[in-house]
Length: 298
Image 1 (cartoon, rainbow, N blue to C red):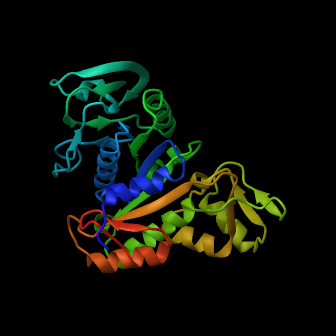
Image 2 (spheres, rainbow, N blue to C red):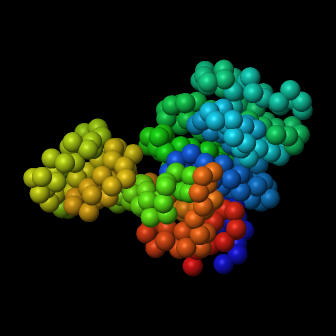
Image 3 (cartoon, rainbow, N blue to C red):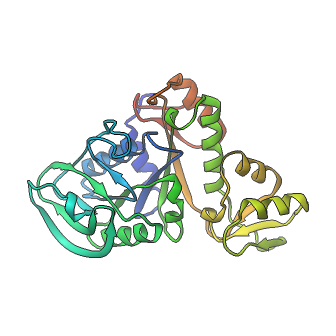
């Protein structure tokens, strides 16, 4: 089904009532920035004048790690941006709203307002706590924020009320089956339900580590295993799927995962697009969108 992907992602995110949306991915080059950019354009079209930032580095012409070309980030006038001061475009000028105490890999973080349409590079704070502070800062200047997140920084979801979009793609996994398994594991973790106070439970202080999960499985623990929120489940891939199949994992505060995007074309491989989207949809039971073909999985 052909759809306006950015508009649909924005609708699903806004329907939660959350003031911010974060796009996280199963790995690098899986379409996170493309999904974020689609949501951003849809928000601009609605007149929202959104804020935008990243936990890493986005919008540069080439990846600083492997020199491969990357999608540029074109921001419209009125957008609030949180990025490193040293990567702001020299022209046109950006209105500086506030200099943050936070630092990034490219210098001090600033909050600015785009005065004229231009390409921007996003370099945000590298820590989960720093990203949360940056989001709060953006929301002082605009009612809605869109964030390019990262799988290795899902701790940034803790303590927030964000809507979450998960991006997966061929670049992160050698086969389609493994890609589907990876996103099923991540979504399973992030979608752990709130615990039932009326039933027996074991409260885990801090993170549920692989060793602690193995102990619970070995002892055939039947109580609810309760963590503060899903970011405290320190399990990935097959280990996560194994634990979720054998333990009643629960949390005190749920996250709001609203959709998944798929990118079937990777740098070294490609999956059949509709088959990939269909398998991800079947594995996760969430709305799934192909950000490149602009289709929603049936």
